[in-house]
Image (cartoon, rainbow, N blue to C red; front, side, top):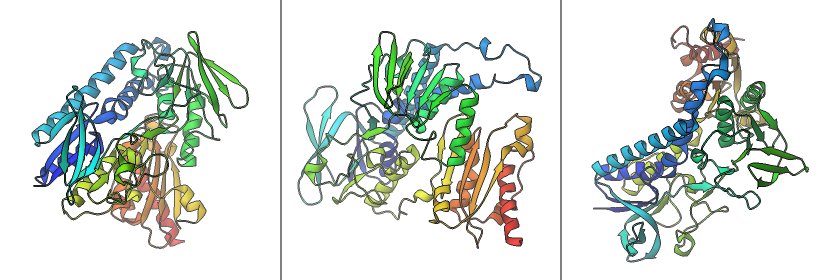
Length: 467
């Protein structure tokens, strides 16, 4: 029987463990925080639960046009401790569900930390395990080791979080009340999501962006559309601004920008990226290649340069999505245990930003098309013309579709809309299965529905073939 040791119990680790157990391997998972890892307990699950609370508040916005009269957002009160308590409760519940699933599958779970020890005999790898309960460190030998240790919020020396006024995104859930004025440093996905949700809850938000638009790595049309919504709802966005120093002054914070301006608020949220948790794993000593920034170098089947040592998830820097981490972990186990497996294909991975409205993408990007890297025809269809969107009062958002110039095969798409994370699914299936715009166009959709705009966009691309 193959023996597998997995260091890290997040999506990469626990999904890998389930696959390995299903293939009759002896599986041990070593995790410091609990089943599900930081993703479930501190990052993805908590943040999306928090955003769900903000969505409830958003439902009370602009109701007069529907003939529903109320006192508006001013009449809404947000019980921050109750919101944060629900966030933590659901995270623990999800972790408990994963724990139970792993135990049922026959996986051994160890609460603690681990590192690579020494190569023993042949293809056996020795892992040094240090239990959390204080027991002495001991060794476990395995034929395959998966590194799945995730990443941690980056901390800047000039803006060290104190957990009270200067915060990482993992610390906001311990606040006794909502901030009076939140300054978010960093306008990537994490910064934009928290800025959007706190703004929805009635908190004045200032977003400090070092680039000329929010979410600079996302589709430019989509990012600018969401930035327009942010500004229209009262968010202050400081583009081309870099925070040099963040310091606490009594019950407030001062953010000094690189041009000398000072922004004052009650709290600052640091959303300046993550660093991989690879420093204490003994990787370099073991001969595992570590890329700049501390990321574990892997190929498309999650192998490192050392036979029998695999890595998956945020510690690899491949694509920081829970869905990608999980697939990397599964691929690693399928490969290690001799199953047929297809290498990871990032072109078919859908991603979503949980702002309001949401932003979802799949396949080739606008930048790829504009640069000539990927020849494609495209259409961008505003949702404002969609019947269901009109009924729901949705003025912002669009569907963008890319296809091959000659064959019409769908190669990418962008959706800006409420629940874009759901609407991107048909486009993802089209990209994954090499469907054409003709096939999308001939698919009968519900009327009225937002998804009808996907078929309409495909019909508009079909017209080009006739011209």
